[in-house]
Amino acid sequence: LKITPSNKLYCRWKNKIDRTMVPSTTRTFLTGMLSVCNCKLSSGFLHHHSPPTLRPILHTAMMATSMPTDGCPLPFEIGPYSAAEVTVHLSSGADVGDGDDDGEFLSKLDQSIEFWRENDYTSAWVTIPASRARLIEQLSSNEDKENFGFNLHHINSTQQTIIMKRWLKDGTEDKIPPWASHQVGCAGFVLNNQNEILLIKEWSGPLSSRVPSRQWKMPGGLLDAGESFEEATCREVLEETGVPCEFESILTFWHRHGLKWDKSDLYYVCLLRPKSLELEICPVEVSAAKWMHVEDFLATEDHPLITHVLKTNFLLDGSIQVGCSERLTPTADMTAGAIQWPNREPYPTYSSIPRK
Image (cartoon, rainbow, N blue to C red):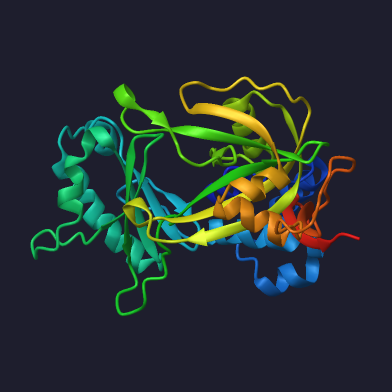
C-alpha cells in the first residue's frame, strides 16, 4: 500500500509531523519522505536511512500510523504508549450521532473496548465533563452485567473534566503511573548589599480576629502551572512585599510527605538580589515585612529553614561577625543551566557548583 495524500494513513502521519517542534526545512523533508515511503516502514529502515536526529520523530510518527483506528465504534485519539483516548461531549447526542442518552454511548464504548483489545492497545481513557458525571458510576461498575472496569485517574479542575482509565492487558501489571503526587513551592531568600534578609509575618487565625503570626519567615508560595523557579519566586516576593528582585540561584530544598489529601511537597529556597529596598506589603496575606541583618536574625530568631540556609550555605552560626561592607556569597548553590535533546527546546537544569 503506497501512502498518498488521499490515504488516511498519510493524513494522520502528516498531521503528526506538522505538530512536531522542528524547523520548517526538517518538516518539509519529513513530508517528502512520507510521500514516497511504504506505510510499513520498519525500525531497520529508519535506523539505516534517516539522520540520527530525526529517528525519534520518525519512530513516533510510525507508531501513530501503525495503530489501526478505522472500524472502531467511537472516535478516539491515539495517546502515549498505545493508549486509546475518548472524549465525552457535553451533550449526550454528540457522542453517538442520533442517540440522546448515555445508554448508546456505553454500548459503543463496550464495543470499542473489544476493538482496542483486538488491535493491541494497552489502555483506554475516557474524559468526562463534570456536567455528565453520572457516567462515572457506570464506567466504574464491576458488576457482571456492566463490567466496564474503569478507575478514576485524575480530575482537571481547569477544564472541569474527570479522566478515567482502564488497563486493557489482562493478566499483566498495570503500567499506568498515578496522577501527580507532589506540589511545588518556593521561597525567596532576598539578600541585599548590607547583608539584610527580607522577612515577613503572615496572618494567623480567622479573618474576623486574625493576628500576626509568631515567626518571621521568607516570602514565597506555590508555583503556578508552567512557571519556572525564577518566575515564581520573584512573583511571590513582589506580590507579598512589593520588592522587585533578580534571581541568582537555588540554595536548598526540602522533600516532605503526608500533607493534605496525601500530597507530598517539594519546597525550594532561591537566592534573590533586590532591585529596590522599598516595602509595600499585600495586606490580605502579609501583616508585616522588614529587612533584618543576618547577625540579628541568628541572635533573635529561630526559623528552622532560614537558620539551616545560613548555617549550611553561608557557614554562619552566630559566632562569626558578618558586617555590612561586602554582600555574603554562598559557599555552594545550584545555578541555572540547560540540557537539550536534538530538535527539542532546552530544559532548565540546576547544578550545584562550589564557589571560590
